[in-house]
Structures are given as structure tokens and as C-alpha cells.
Image 1 (cartoon, rainbow, N blue to C red):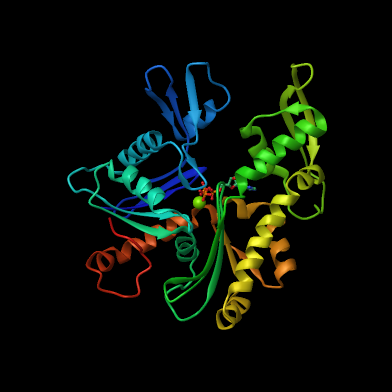
Image 2 (cartoon, rainbow, N blue to C red):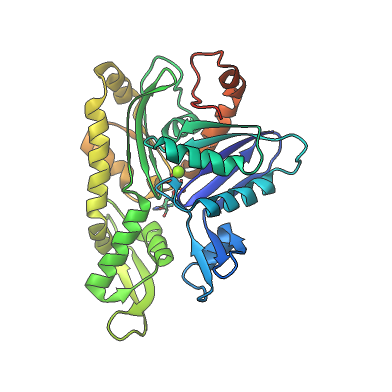
Length: 337
Ligand SMILES: Nc1ncnc2c1ncn2[C@@H]1O[C@H](COP(=O)(O)OP(=O)(O)OP(=O)(O)O)[C@@H](O)[C@H]1O
Ligand SMILES: [Mg+2]
């Protein structure tokens, strides 16, 4: 049995090759602080976010695509894997994605968390490569293709050819940073304190990275910073666009940096095929238009952008045998553990 695993900062996704089982759940875990008992994971734990008692902690144990709290990531991965792994007769092989810029220690922590389930093999693939694979690009040929995977904790930008990375860059200014900026802005401008889940919902509903064509509004509920009492108010897209303006600029600059470093032949290919956007954040209003306007290159958003990476990990399971035997020289999978 082979499992494709996208352990994301905000969402974990798993796909299994020989059956229909799949998981799409927030990367959240709730536990009792007194005895460390796990109370909930995924969507159920997400519901508890900001609503717990003093005894219960609810955390996203991954940060910027790497492990922030290892014991909790291990627990979470084990629960998710057990759900898709109905038979324990054969130990599964796992293809998991990692951010482009990651240290050896961080890499081993991810492999360690996955291995704790009892697996035959763990194979890693860079998120951008998986994203390209999963969005239907041919990265194995002698042709340049560019992908920007936009998640909650990282943005992975890469130009690839012949199954390898030619130019790449990872930044940790992504969806979560936008949420933080929205929280700060609303407090500063309106004296309203809101939680992380409220900020995320607001961003997904009305945020726009270019001046919005039509004004949308979102009703925020939180606490008045002066009086300490509950208060609700409406914000509009123009305000939220202002709150996240610097973040969009940072993302755009990183994309420009990669384009500038791309060898001319590959850049010609990218100019012809366009840039592919994947990841949940690629759905933010105006992102495609902003990148097209600033780069002059056509931009496509993948069909199911949030699923591209796990779909790519799944595609890559076809290369496991070759990677294990180290036969083929053109293999998208990196390290075998
Ligand atoms: N419609 C939308 N508009 C704006 N943002 C969105 C939308 N849908 C999802 N997002 C944002 O996309 C991010 C989640 O994307 P994704 O699931 O690809 O991240 P991840 O894989 O968990 O994170 P990472 O790859 O950084 O580790 C969140 O910040 C979420 O708020
Ligand atoms: Mg991701």
C-alpha cells in the first residue's frame, strides 16, 4: 500500500493508491494540558479553536510547513494514517512533500513523525514539484515550467525541468501572515479584537490583492479592545486589501526574484506555457490578475488548487520502485528513508 501525504501548515491531505480512502482535514490537534490526552484532531479540533477551557490546548503543530511541536505532529499523523490504512498486514510506503527550503534536521523530524506509524519506506518530494505534477504539468521533459504553491505557512516558487529544480525560492510570508495582518489591522483601526479563525474566514470571503472591482463586506465578531465587551461590525474588501497589501507585495517580489534568476531558455518556455498557481491561497481574489499584470506572463490557477500537492505526491508513488532501486536517473523523488 502506498500513501500520498501532504502535511500542510493549515491542512493535511492523504490519498491511498489501492482504495478510495482520502483525508482532507485541518492540521489541528486538541489535547488535555494536565495529562496530555489527545481529545480531537482535524475538523473537530478546529471547531474548538479559541473556544477551549483552561485545561485544553488546541494547536496547529506545523509552522511554515515544518514541525513546530514534534510529539503532537506524530500523534496527528498517526491518527490520520490509521484512518486510511485499513489493513496493517503490509506496512505502507509513504510519499510526503516538504517545503523547498528546509534543513536536514527539519527533514528528519518529518520523516521521524511519519515513521512512528510503522512504515516500510518514506520518500520525499519538494512541494513545488508535487504541485506541478498534480496540476498536470510535464516536469520530466527538457522544458521549463513554473509553479507557485501558495499555502498557509509557505509559498514555494520554482522553475523546473528534466524532473529537477532549476530555480526555486521558499518564503514564509503566506496565508497565515495575512490572517495576522488582518487581526492587527482590525484592532488598530476599529478597536476590535478577533481570533485567528475569524480572520481566516474574513480573508477567504472578501480579501482581494488588487483594488476590488466590487465592494464585498464581512461581518466580524469579536471583543471591543477598550470596553472588553462583545461587538460585531462589518468590514469591506478595500479595508482588507489595505491590511494585506504588504504581504501581496512580498509574494510578488519573491516571484520576480525567481523569474530574474531563470535561465533564458527556460524562461522562454514559461512565457509560452504560463505560470501555474496551486495551493489554497491561490484562490484569493485578484492573485492571478496581479501576477499577470506585474510579470506580463499568463497565469493559470490549477483546477483543484488545494489538492494539487497531494495529487502530485500520489502521481509520484509510481516512481517509488525506481527511487528505491536508484535505477532511473530521472526521478522526481528525492530521498529514500
Ligand atoms: N478562497 C480562498 N481565498 C483566500 N484564501 C484561501 C481560500 N481558500 C483557502 N485559502 C487559504 O489558503 C491557505 C491554506 O492553503 P493550503 O491548504 O494549500 O495550505 P497548507 O498546504 O496547509 O500550507 P503550507 O503548504 O504552507 O504548509 C489558508 O491560509 C487559507 O485561508
Ligand atoms: Mg501546502
